[in-house]
Each structure stands twice: as structure tokens, then as C-alpha cells.
Image 1 (cartoon, one colour):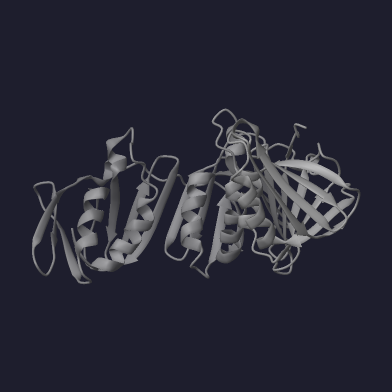
Image 2 (cartoon, rainbow, N blue to C red; image 1 turned 90 degrees about the horizontal axis):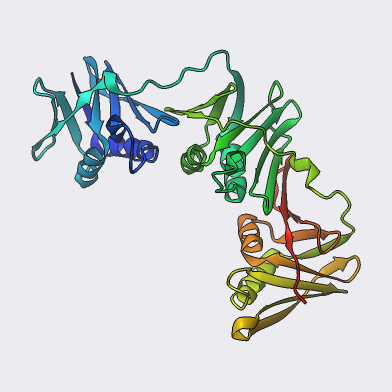
Length: 372
């Protein structure tokens, strides 16, 4: 088995696949990349058993075979080469010899048959989504997903597909984000919960892509195919909480304000908040928004006034400044609207401008009880 490939082309593909590999694996074979050669096509795969990703490369070869090559060692050597063709030759003594312009390097390999096979989905449903839409949906929601191992369903992003459009939801019970598109549709109704790790990998690659992503899914697995990549992952098992029931429908108090100005103010005031509760207080009356925080233990306090456009009753409401900062950071609009009903009901944050047609973002943040 022998093939020739460009060093930088191979490195670029392997760096993407490398993000699948865990730093500590239960099976030693998972520390390798699987190389499967079929004449001019080279398939390289990486897996952690839950997620498997494959890239197909066009190379120069006339042979066939499969070997598993240690990932870290291969990435380390590839990073040092300037752009040049490299020749990989599988020798009889269980090593792969890499020949470059300046030298030869031998790496021990494992037989390709030992590498776990990727799951093949039986009778999957299929939806096609533009890469840019999927990348935006993931980056807008993933930050709100939880990290609690006891509630695995909340540690992923909920995908809801229907002929009306696509909805992506993430929540950790303190904050919730719902990202919806009516300009991209699925042929039939389906929903599933995607784990964070494969989504972070996808987010990184899709951001720079203008391809169409074909998503195939059944009850237990989903496959994302685009350009020369295929990513297959196991879905999170369980029923997603009824998020619609949490979003308050009647919110008479509406605050319109410049996002950046509000974000900077919250950031500054939050420095003076209690380090465990991160509590800040919003006091709204007329066209004035008063943002304050106090850390009684250290006698630190801060108080800022902003002008805003407010319709509703005068009110005071407390929020965790970290959640508010994360949400405001994640939006890209100039103006935002904060809708509230009562100090003990969730506030709803929505962008006023900067959205595509058919795109909506709804963010929900739970208040914290104010200690008077």
C-alpha cells in the first residue's frame, strides 16, 4: 500500500478530524486515524465511539488497503513540513514509512480492521440545510446548553424539523435560547437531541463553508454530510422538556435599548456584584434604566443610569449578570428588546434588527430574587 499526498492538504484535513479524538481513550485504537485507501481516494476517519468523522481526500495512488496510524505523532510531524508531496509506504515490518524532500520517517501502525466501524443508519429521514444556517443555529444556541450529567437531555441542542421550518433549542434551566428558521424546511416532522461535542466540531468547519449539509437521522444516530466530510454521532436519548410551556406569553413591560451600551454597562456593574450570586438589579421607570449591584461583604457597589425606550409599569428585577452578558454577547443586533411581566417571571430578550427574513431568535433568562 503506497500513496502520495500534499503535506498541507493532509494536515488541514487531519486537524479537523483530530478534534474528534479524546485526550484519554478507553480503547487504545481510538488514538489513531484510520486510513482506507482505494486507488485515488483516501478515506481518513477518527472516532471516540460516540462520534465518528471521515474525510475523503483525492490523492495519487494505485493501491488499496487500510491501516491505523497514531494521530498525535502524525499531526506533530506534519506540522513541521513546508508544503511538499509526501510518500506514504506501508512496509512489511508493521511500520508506515513517510518520505519527504529531506528525509524518511517510520511510524508503527495497527491493522485497519481493529478500528471500530462507523454506524450505518437504517432507513433514515433526510433534511438538507445550508451550512451557514446550521453554523449560525449552533453558535446561537450551544452556549445555553447545560453541563449537568444528571440531566443529559439538557446537555445538548434540541433539533425540531417540520414542513413549517426548523427550530433549534438549548437550555440549562436558568437560560433558554430558541433559534427558528421558516425559510428552510424539512419534508416531515422529526426531532432529536444532538450532543455538544459533534456540534462544536461542525460549528468550526461550517462557518467557512457555503455548502449544503445533508442531515440524515433515525432514533439513535444522525449523520451530517457536506463537501468531503461525513460526521456520524449518537444522539442523546430521552425526551426534551416542553420548552414552549416555560416561555411567558403575556409580557406587557417592554424595554428597547442599544445592545452594546447595555452590555458594557452590565459588564461594568457586574464587577461589583456578589461573587457567588452575580446578581445585578435593573430598576426601570419612565425612560430611565438604572443598573446596580452591591457586594455587602466587601462594601462594593456600583450604579449606572441609561436612557431607554420603555413601555409598561415601573419595576425592579434581578438577573444573574453572567447569563445576561452571555446572551447579549451572542446577539449581533444594534437594538434589543427585553420583555417582562413580573419580577419573578422570566424575561425575554430578542434582537430588534439584523436578522434574515424568516429568522427569529428568542432568549429567555430567569430572574434572581432580589434581596432588599
